[in-house]
Length: 195
Image (cartoon, rainbow, N blue to C red; front, side, top):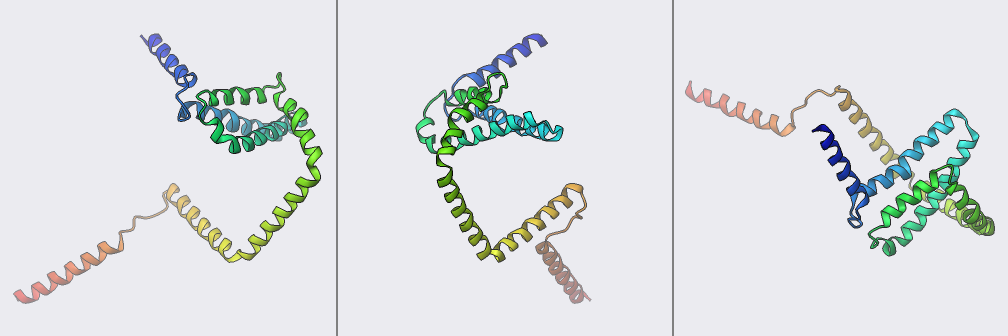
């Protein structure tokens, strides 16, 4: 009976993964995110920690290819969102990018990204430099707001950390104390009338 249950569960899982249910198919979208981001982040971490330059370069090429793909995807979203097989194709593309034997990321980088960036490097450097300068101006003109947001964020994180560690004592809401205080006053004055 357990064998039958596992077969049914596997079949249902494969159907959810492989059956195109439109752009709202959360299973295939989650798989794409896991394969496209979660696994590469961990693999990049391992390559950095092992100080393996070949693996580091492999994952740098992947991130360049993935970032470029994501940029194109943002602008082409309205065109591709209607396709029922889009996330299945994206899944296959991300797997192709990662497999060392296929060399997908290296191929995409060497054949398309590198020539594009070499051809437009001066203009891209100019745009990036200008954008960076504007960002520095914006940050410097809003230092007080940034500091307030940083302080608020730090306070919230410290409170959340205390709650997670169980260090916060139970505090009754202020309005409840006021009502109890009024009740005491009324009952105290009522006892004066009885005497």
